[in-house]
Length: 315
Length: 161
Image (cartoon, rainbow over the protein chains, first blue to last red):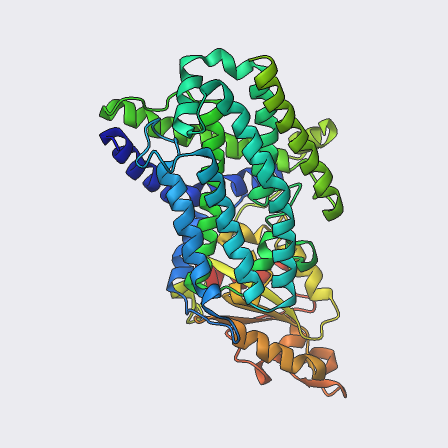
C-alpha cells in the first residue's frame, strides 16, 4: 500500500461515484441529439437519483433479506473495484485485490446478487430477467477472463496495475494482434455486461424483451436509487478498465498533484469519449434476438482465445 | 448505416422549441419531485386515441423527456400515473393496485375526456366511472383525444421545468 495507491483509490472512488450518472446522462443526451430530440441534459440521472432517495421505501410482500441487501452489495462490490482497479493511477490501494481474477469475479458477483434479488421478488418477470442475465453472464465471464489474461501474458502477472504498467513502458504492444483481438473481445463483454444494445435495450418498456431491468422491476425509492447508481458505476468501471488497458496514456505513475490531476482529467475524457462513441453506435443497432446473443458472445470468446494463442505464439 | 447517418444529418433537430414554462397551480407532489418525474401509463379502458397522443408527446417532436419526464415499465419506479380512458369494471381493481404500488410522493394525471368525466361512454354498462371515482386525481388533461402539447404541459406542471 503506497501513498499514490491510497490517494488514487480515494480519487477513483469519488470520480466514479460522482461521474457515473453524468456518463449515463451524456450517453442519453448523445442518443437524444442523434434522434433529433432536445434531450433532458446530462444532469438528469442525478436529478432522478436525488428524487428517488427522497421517496418512500417499499418492501414488496413476500421478499426476504436477499432483496433488501442486494442494492447495497451491488454498489459496495462495484465501489471496491472502482477503488482498486488502475483507473487514475497505476498503483493500487490494495494491490492484492487489483488482480484480474478478483476484479472480474467481483463484477460478476454483483450481477449474481441482483439476479438473486430478482428471483427473491417472486414475480414472473423477476425470474425471467434473472434467468436471462445469468445466461449472458455465464457466456461473458470466460471471455472477460481470457481476454484480459491475453494481455497479462507479456506482463507476466495477472495484476492489473502491472499489465497497465507494461503497456505504458512499451506502447507498441497496443497494435499487436493480441491487443487488438483482446480489445474487440473485451468491448463485446462490456456491451453485454452493462446491458447495452445489441444485447439488451436500456430504454425498453417492454417486459418481454428486458434482461437487466426485468430483475429490478420491484425496486422503489432509495433501493432503486442504489440499483441505478450501481448499474451506472458498473458501466463507468468497465469503460474505465477498457481505456486503461488499451489507451493508458495520462494515467498517474507518481504521487504529485499534477500527475494525479492529469490522471483524473484523462480518465474523465477517455471514458466520456468511449461512452459517447458507444451511445452513437447504438443508434445504428437493433436489439439482437435473445437466441442469437450466444452466437455473438461465442464469437467474442473465440477472439479472446485467439488473443491468448497469439500472445504465446508471437510472444 | 451510411444512409441512416445521412438521414440523421439531413433531418437534424426535429424537436420544436420549448414553449414558455409551466403555468398554473402545481400538484402537491411536484415540489418533492424536483425536475424528475417517472411516468407509468395505465390504460383503464381507452380507445387508444390517447395512447397515440401520449406516444407523440414522448416522440422527437414534442420531446417530453427534455423536461425531465420519462416513461417507465413498472409502477414501483414511477412517481406519476398517466391514466387514460374510462375505468371499466375489469380495470378498476388493477388501477387501484397500480396506484397502491407507487411509492409516495405520487400523483395521478387523468388524460383525455373519458378519464375526466367518462366522455361519450358515460352510463355505459361496463363502465365503473371516471378515474377520479377510483383513485385521487391531481391533474387533468382536456381533449378527445388531447393534443400532445396539453399532455406535455400537464407533465411540466409535475416536473416544474
